[in-house]
Amino acid sequence: MITGTSQADAAILVVAANTGEFEAGISKTGQTREHALLAFTLGVKQMIVAVNKIDMAQYNQGRFNEIVKETETFIRRIGFKRENLQFVPISGWAGDNMIEASTNMPWYTGPTLLQALDNLTPPTRPIDKPLRIPIQDVFKISGIGTVPVGRVETGIIRPGTVVTFGPSGLTTECKTVEMHHEQLPQAGPGDNIGFNVKNVSVKDIKRGYVASDSRNDPAQDTESFTAQVIVMGHPGQIRRGYTPVLDCHTSHIACKFEELVTKIDRRTGKAQSAAPEFIKTGDSAVVMIKPTKPMVVEPMTQYPPLGRFAVRDMRATVAVGVIKSVEKKSRAGTTTKSAAKASKKK
Image (cartoon, rainbow, N blue to C red; front, side, top):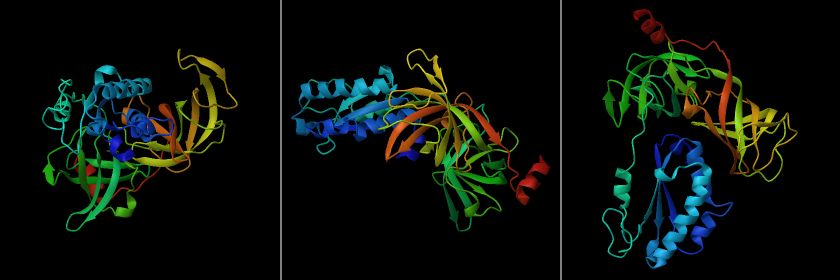
């Protein structure tokens, strides 16, 4: 779910209309709340809330309005704007309001689910920034070779681009770029692609690595980074040395809270106290974090998709954060023969 959400521009949040199921979903430990929070943290700004199983609520307008009110309140508290939200009552089982307007709900005059998808606004694409492709998976395809797969977040990749994979520093040449089994002359932000790289084994590239242009701000390993963290729901206190798993783009890596720098007032954004002993649910703080394994992250201001993260512990999202600054660690990675040749040509 996290990998898919990190690649999405918009989301459909499906909630159930029948009594009991909706209430369980939006309770403090419910999945509806968790999914909405993760979607916003991972960069989704537009959301369609599909109120499903409306047939089990006898197509009741009052029940639909009650669900809209409850859901809108907590979704807006997370950070979504009202103009980027659409609420559609549907029945997947009976087909109501999926493609065509339902005769069972004369009181509803809004769009069907298909129309709501058409109403979404395509986001502007950061083409002018250096290349960044978080790797989702790596395949070995017979007759082609090693094919990393991921979504282009920023920049443009073309066949012939000399690519550096962070955090390992491995440099090789991109031979072909494919999307939906079709070769492309280039791929830009928003494209989910596979690209063939030469002289590289499947074992050399892992999920969570980031592909970048070797000549334009290549992705590097991270020594440590400073981030502003908001604690959403932790049963105890978070102190120095706390080591949860951080989900940032496609990487899931345990990171240590090295230092609690300052506690921040969430309303004003101003510092409250320096070096707090602990932070708890509802608190916001600037924290210095150190990954326990090689990892690529970037400041939110430069590369937004690589500058947001969720803190996962006890199988739940306990906090979310944005990266303010990164201390990078340069590693001497290997350069393949094809990369050296391509570099000489240019």
